[in-house]
Image 1 (cartoon, helix red, strand yellow):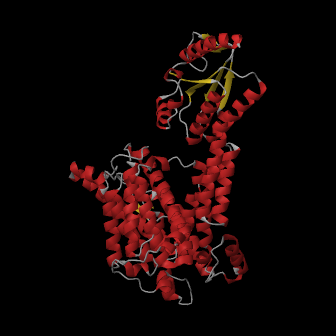
Image 2 (image 1 turned 30 degrees about the vertical axis):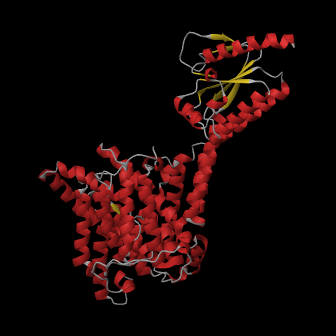
Amino acid sequence: MTFSGKIDFHPKLIGALRHYSFAKFKSDLVAGIVVGIVALPLAIAFGIASGVSPTVGLITAIIGGVLVSALGGNSVQIGGPTGAFIVIVYNIIATYGLQGLAIATFMAGVILILLGVFHLGTVIKFIPYPIVVGFTAGIALTIFSTQINDFLGLGLTGVPSEFIPKWGVYFANLGNVNWPTVVVGLVSLAIIIITPKISKRIPGALTAIILVSVAVYIIKGVAPEWDVETIGQRFGALKTDIPEPHGFELTMATINNLLPSAFTIAILGAIESLLSATVADGITGSRTNSNTELIGQGVANVVVPFFGGIPVTGAIARTMTNISNGARTPVAGVVHAVVLLLIFLFLMPLINMVPMACLAAVLIMVSYNMSGWRSVRAIFSNPKGDISVLIVTFLLTVLFDLTIAIEIGLLLAIILFLRRVMENSSVKVYSEQLDATTGTDATVHEILDVKPGVEVYEIDGPFFFGVATKFDELMRTSISMSRKPIVRIIRMRKVPFIDSTGIHNLEVLIKSSHELGIHVVLSGVVESVHRDLQHAGIEQLMDPDHICDHISKAVETANRIVEDKIPLRSRG
């Protein structure tokens, strides 16, 4: 990771087109058509579940899909709306309206671009796994809970967005279940589950939508009293015109209010897209440019809100479908978007016939696949710290808000990480004799004689604020409990980095030691730490020969200082 240097933006599409062939195009064309068909019901369902119209879901998949494939850093990534955003998008719309969603999505796009520009693509991958599993499982349960109304045909309006009040309303209205709707939902769910067992190439969601929509249309013609709500009944005739770009007003007050939500969208989008890209790399053997991928995702999220769209990210299921159907380059992703565009322009009237219960079944299946219950079960055999992070993130996601869940989950993970580093970091004290080869693979021991008056402190681990405090306490204790030493050797061969607190404590130690007439010698300082000490001016506080590259030189220097000092003390 680096925060400087050139912008790492190298879209895979540009490289792919340099050596493109007709054979690759045939593979990309087939994959793109299949993925476009698979993406159709998901785009519609995600749009509706997010609180917008099916048209918005399709527009997002079309525009976002083109931009992610054209500008991204992965050859087979498919971008579009995903289930992970449903909860956060729904809450933003409920609080700030569509205008607020557009602003939050735009700001999230800018954040993603900045993450890529500042080469933070690799850092996102290191977000703790229990956090990812926790909020993914929480999102899955939340999505499931939002579909009960349509799946049971309760006909409720103004359902609370909070998890517990929402289920309270559901239980209070179970007497209003519409049984024809339940039958449609159960049949749709059965088709979605059974279809992959017959053929993995046939998308279960699309099969369910086609078969169930036709069946409901025929039954309604024979028995008009058979009441099952469809997309057309809820949203009216869907428009087939690409919306004209429109702007939105940005004010500091709006930015302040929506920044946490924008940050959540950006982090969630970055995690999901890079996770999808990593899985794709494992199958295809290619290598994703993480920074380019984030910039591509960011541009997509900057552009989409001007057309009324919702947030975009890499979609794991669609990306895997793309790979399994022979995709070779990002052209397949562009073809998938073109297929959706043709459906949008010429087949939207047919979308009006789709039952809402069928889409609810699609999303219930999506929530099941998202839940990752096997991963949750596996984490419960891990250390208690990981389990606590998982549980806290899950509960916060379900009971409160995804933004709070990510923020507190990350904070808790950081605290646990620091605790583990502290537990594995130590400060050892040596006197009289020291084995210079301890902690190495050397088979021959090198015993160094340390003269009385010399104390050796070895720091094992990062010298950050936690260890720096421990080291400072040890220094104070050593002075109060023993005779004042003549020389202190600080052995730092196992210190991979030092932070500002460590540098400050080291500076205070050197100055206070000099005031007490104690010499300080540094040993085995690695290059990166040495560079930080130079920039902080630590070297100027010490004699040049008091910074040694090996403990044997440091002990030799310390013993020589003691020999020079002892005669002076005896004369005193």
